[in-house]
Each structure stands twice: as C-alpha cells, then as structure tokens.
Length: 87
Image 1 (cartoon, rainbow, N blue to C red):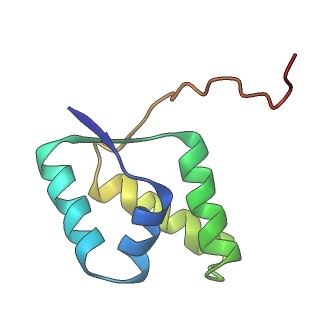
Image 2 (cartoon, rainbow, N blue to C red):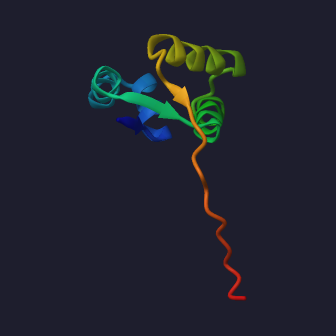
C-alpha cells in the first residue's frame, strides 16, 4: 500500500521531534511512502519562507528525506480541474 503524508506532517517531522516523526518512521516501515513534485516544492517553500531555511538547507532536508526513506517515491497525483465559473 502507498501512503502520502501532507506537507504539514513533513515539516513537523523536521522542526519538532514527536508524534509526526514516529508516524513517518512507522509509515516508512509498513508502507511505501509517496509524494508529489507539488508537495515537495511546497515543503521546500515552507522551509525557506516560514522557517527561514536557506534554499541549500531546504534542499539538503529533501535529500535527507529521500536518502533515509529511499522508497519515498514521487508520483503523479491527478488534480481535477476546478472552476468557480458556473458556465
């Protein structure tokens, strides 16, 4: 089974140890952890803008995530077209 952890969980894993870190470790042992380019870009953006990581540090966090959880695959997650137009 594949499991996708949202950006907030990933940020909490790297900012504060605790439940989210344990969740990621459990998921990595029991499931195939997947992500998307969109989520990984959002993760990098939040680290740099909200938590003031340098771009290089944020990329190293992404590299660590991929190294430690080598089966963290990037997958295409379909996004339906959403329109607020009532046409």
